[in-house]
Length: 114
Length: 107
Image (cartoon, rainbow over all chains, first blue to last red; front, side):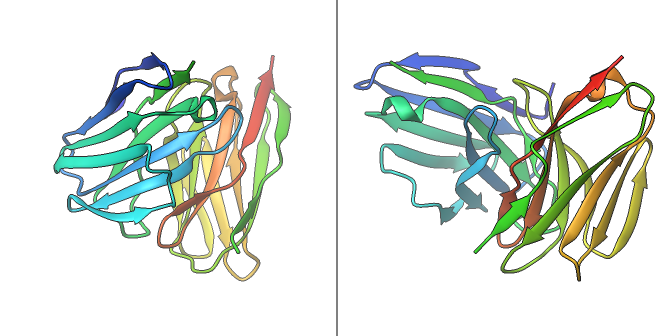
């Protein structure tokens, strides 16, 4: 079990569907992250939130829309995804975005696009 | 550019010692992390180095040489449960992961 909770664990959706991934942490961390991980590859950074404000967007397509409603929650809204978007989506958090802060990862949502 | 290299795969025997190397060339450096990731699970934090030298934590140790852009993770007294991917990650203004090393431990 990790201290970062992601739901759902698995998601299958069609290319025209709209769905959301959710992430929650109660460690008082003020930085939260979304990563995408393909099989046998390292995690790739998508977005960084610092104190509930978006601080980094790694040129992610607009079909992925992040949202940080409060300091404990992070959502990723999905719309009109493509088959190549099938991957493990990991959420992480850290005390802040300083370089010496380890990130704590959730177990991820395994997303399949039909 | 940002470049972090690790061997793709390594094998070792239970009870042995294995060293996983990581070389990096990045614009900026705020420290180097090692993470362990079992198949289908979240990466878990193992160690952090920002100054040169060796950090020891139980069976795991991590070494850093900033001048050489080099780090290694040393795993002692290998156990079957150590079979996993090991990710080297450099902190700049964000965390940049290496390609990962898949370690298989055999009995």
